[in-house]
Length: 226
Image (tube, one colour):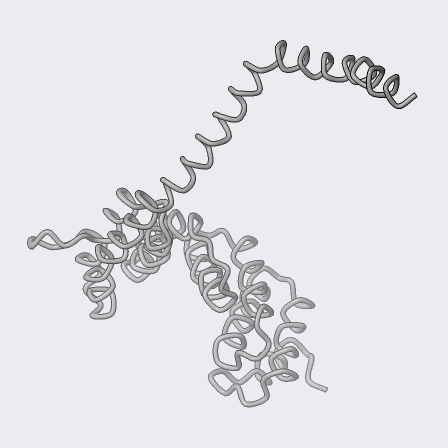
């Protein structure tokens, strides 16, 4: 009986082996192509990260260094366009390294520079292309973009951004009330007194220490003093 079992075992396995062999024979080429493609993609990702992306990040940061210095010195044309020594300005950093973190930040600096130079169209253009995960910088970016929109007469867009910036970080008792005040003042200009009162009262409630503008005066002229 044992001998019969040994003799009978191979035939029961043959169909399974044949099925797998047949599958591989028919599909080995596309499977190998898929494996090679996956390896190529992974290799490309790692290669891009270590041989292109990271070196570019470093180069972009180095290129931005002098432009940021000019920005802090209020030399805005030099910050934007660079100098005769070959130092990059923000515009060239964007052109050459736009996909890097430093290139993205250069959009913010370029927008802020153009805003201070009174070129509101270009200010809006570069600020619109800036993105960040930092709530503080995002709020500041929105407020600057709102300033640009306001100067361009795009008041509805501007007031929306002022409001978003002013309510983004409640604990920011320096910038947030300023953004809220700008929202309230612009709501007044738009004839939206209810919304203006809401912004002014929010300042009184959340930021009672805010004294740059007399919020009660603005509430009073809207007939909203308690």
